[in-house]
Image (tube, rainbow, N blue to C red; front, side):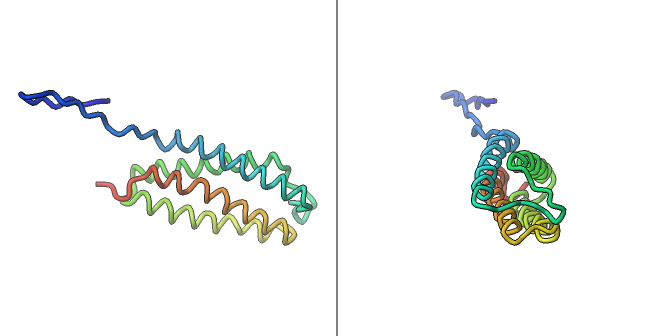
Length: 145
């Protein structure tokens, strides 16, 4: 949308900055994070990381993409809500994301994974967050008026 400012001497058209929505950036970053975590999980699996819990059930490598896409969608939804209601959307989103990543370590540490699997899973959470959080936070204003 453009706005025209009428001036007797001239007519100036000012185009607003083209900033795609949080959702559009979220889709791209979700795909990037899912591809990265899946590739790293496949490499770890090939190196001998089992991703098996205490029952012997192993996380299938394609499951990393599915879970990453789902959780990034939740994170993007949280960011979209914060963009509308938080007084400081960017910093609130970053603090929330850091807290959620820390909480994501709990299942890895308590579901009976071996040390290599647990540490690899925790690392994958951090990798996904390192890809997603800066991109999404960059779409949020620091302070709403």
